[in-house]
Length: 75
Image (cartoon, rainbow, N blue to C red; front, side, top):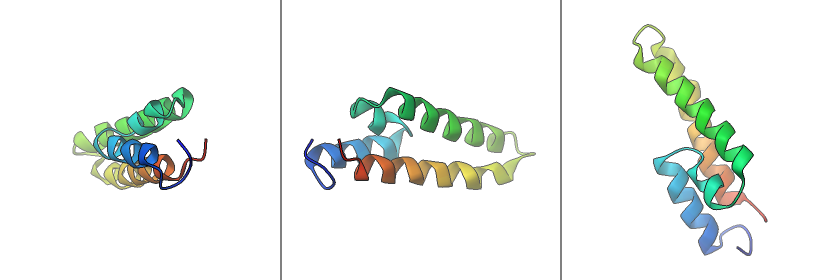
């Protein structure tokens, strides 16, 4: 991957769109992938309970952050 806008970063961003953290995993950044996946998964799971529905907002923000982070990564 040669940097921002490269084909590898675009694929990583698309992967993170479907599963947060997958793009970072594709790039070989295991710790970042785990952190993004857990942040998004925990927030979306809490939002699914119904009582903590407002947790979907931080989950969405973390998910967008994961996509942008995968797209802008400079190896």
